[in-house]
Image (cartoon, rainbow, N blue to C red; front, side, top):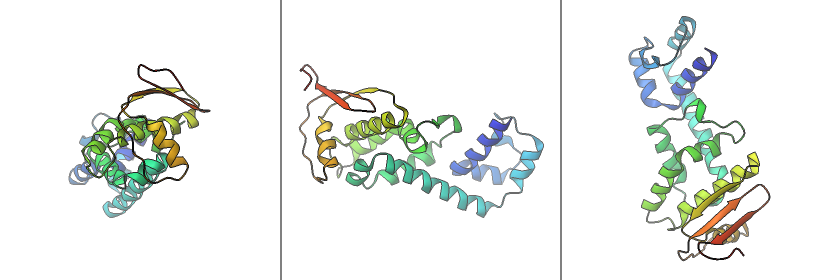
Length: 199
């Protein structure tokens, strides 16, 4: 029951459509899949709509900052990342079970929305063609540092070269398409060209 109570409040905070439905009809019907007690429903009905909107905006802003901090190189190369994340969050609000407590909200949200963000990057003419690959690799590196779990992925570009250049402070990187496999763990990043030997 406590988990349902937390889920109801979390949904109200991250889902603008649900907030509109709740304030239009606070019967609790929009939470039919949860077991909410009468005391919680009464508490939710007592919430001030404007105050809830302010708290919700603050939460979205906090999550946005966490997402950008998770992949700082991608955030610097693609200034629209925060806006694209906010749009995706509004369209597909996060649920409590999406949060990995070991990783935290930024990595959890990026893992959840990675396919959609990669597609958004691919559609953005101002973004490097390899940005989606870099997003996946930088996210894997951050996640492995946090939870000490190894991760593997395949990228169509040698984005380890971009990651290395960006780590050194370079702002512009050119990459030709060359597929690579990557293994990322807490201590290091390993790669090999597809069909080639490891460095």
